[in-house]
Length: 176
Image (cartoon, rainbow, N blue to C red):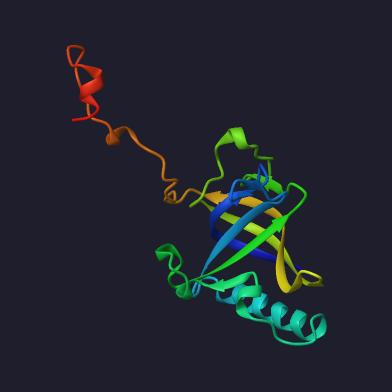
């Protein structure tokens, strides 16, 4: 069952290239959608209902919250997740990524980034194998909706440096 998520903030996007974790390629494209508890109440309920169904029908019982792709942001240490839920979805096949007018987006377009607003299509599935029981999100597609305040990428900006003239010794100017 596909679930449509409308106008959610995008976090940790790896939708053009596979994600890396601990320096290792995961082999998966990933995205985390941030859902406001008030604005996204209907889709959160839809997701929770599907999770409950999968636990009952596929896994034959409840599983711990840390094994479910939907997380309560109030239980996170990330300030941007307060008052929200997050849902992580991934896929081994590159997902459909489109613009508002449904034209394809490529990485070089610089349209999709952590903090922008997107629509997403995901589906939930139950994992029950030698690696354990989980409820996972399958990432099917992402559509850019609008710009948002970018999340920090921890990169150094121009303000981190001091200006100095041609007459200054560049070796000592940086140290001052």
